[in-house]
Image 1: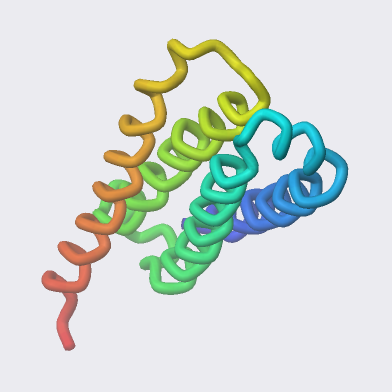
Image 2 (image 1 turned 135 degrees about the vertical axis):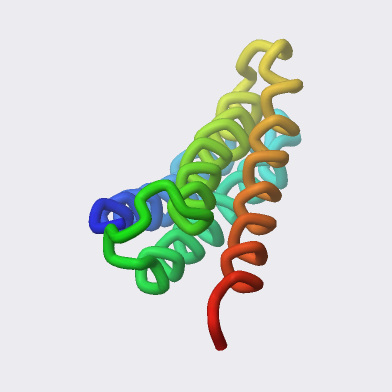
Length: 126
């Protein structure tokens, strides 16, 4: 789990940078395409899951269970963010329409990560 704070920091940084880029430099383009909301949705989910990833890194067993549910949740969130938010960013800029089905696949990975966190919480002694 030691690598996940770094991944969380990179994800958080890129989410803020892409959100600001969309809100400022790309805003006229996104408004003209009618895709500002799509960009903002990608940015929101990107940032939320960067924060969630940091939380899981803090909760994690410090490497004692690298294949446990928290580690798998982090992996799902990383992949899900790339697929979900990444596809929305590309689609908002006029990317190929075949990327449309990639977005829900990313969403399923994000949801799976949350289910894994719930599973880890259920198994933890309280």
